[in-house]
Length: 117
Image (cartoon, rainbow, N blue to C red):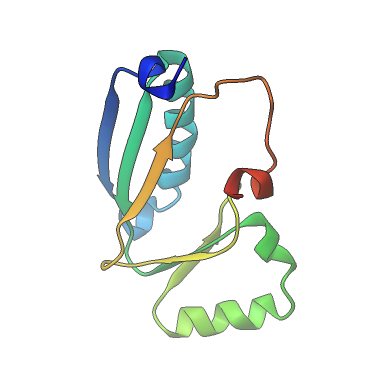
């Protein structure tokens, strides 16, 4: 069975987020993962944030992280560490973030690194 046969629809969602609800992007991510799985549908999510540095869990171990985050803040960027994903990404008004959620087809669980590969 091909992916074309498995998914008959694709849901599109557009979410402009503000600095005060920046963490909602990742709460919404978790909700959309659940919806994709339970409804067996692919979801394409577009979202934007004001100037923000989004750090991944691995970024917590960077040397001199505290000093670097001070520099980021001095340039007008907010920042936070998300509880999922890979390494840091920068978002601002000129960047359109895109997330594609596809229902898991097997019981095999991939590590973050394997998923990105």
